[in-house]
Image (cartoon, rainbow, N blue to C red; front, side, top):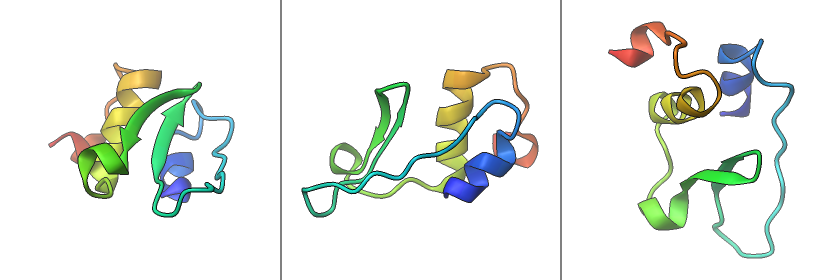
Length: 70
């Protein structure tokens, strides 16, 4: 997922940081400390298309994601 985000948002993202959690099963995606996806709340892992849309909506809402937007 990290590589997909870096590839899709190569001009917008400076990097992706993976942080280990003390709590087993934790999976959260945050942008500038704002959580945009939490596996515990959703009860599942995000699909990559869903994650790309969530990231896009926060960092560049006008960006066209091509086939991901369909």
